[in-house]
Amino acid sequence: MHLAACIFPTAYSIRPGDLATALEERGFESLWVAEHSHIPVERVSPWPGGPDMPQMYYDTLDPFSWLAVAAAATTRLKVGTGICLVVERDPIHTAKEVTSVDVLSGGRFLFGVGAGWNLEEMANHGTDPSRRFGLLRERIEAMKAIWAADGAEYHGTRVDFDPIHQNPKPVQVPHPPIHVGGVFPGGLERAVRYGNGWIPIAGRGEAGFDPAAVVAQRNEACERAGRDPAEVEVSIYYAPPERAALEAMAEAGITRALFGLPPAGADEVLPLLDQLAELEQGI
Image: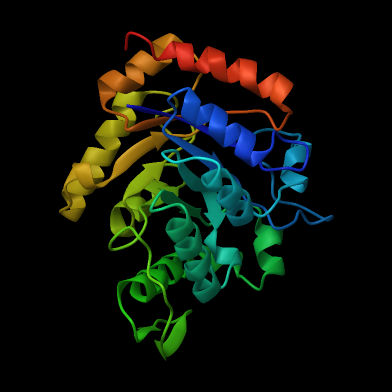
């Protein structure tokens, strides 16, 4: 099982190059960052994490720019979006950004995607919240087409374009792995339909924090869809930073445990990384 870290990329967070270097030195597999283009002043959508949404949601930098800096400072560490709000983005431009980071990193990009929870935020981008999951699927399918061939075209109900040239193609073939966020059952069903992985948040959804149940859900969904469960990785977002939890995830067959880091400076984050790295010893 891989250890990974996730963080909100703010101006007051540890610098991306410094964090990436520290993670690589400590043996972490990957670094994932969140995305929010903005937070509406008038917001009705409740934050899923509780009554008070943290300030970091208001202050995020662009994830692709941040990850490009992180990748440039390292040679092995994988970098990923966790998650990219595809329903708020043009798919042709986003396909180009994904390719750019993948090429510049030498094929180390992981494409975490989702529709998000902030209905007012996505509505400001012209997205009908009630139709966001269909839009997410079409935009992912359209990007896959762009990455797969020159002269790509896509004709859906929400995304439609005639043949286009977009080069270069990603280093990873046929494209960087697509990890789909979202709680069970919807998030898992979408991951199995068009993803290479599922990234549920620990403690949310029917299974709560039960790694064995989460893996069983993945296996059953893959069986219904006729997919090999090995084709759909399971990564636990905001995994509990506890040895017993890590052992349970490893025993259940979880692919990746992502520990949440505070959007703070190096003086706070680096000692925390040392503690997290020690958890894996002997597992």
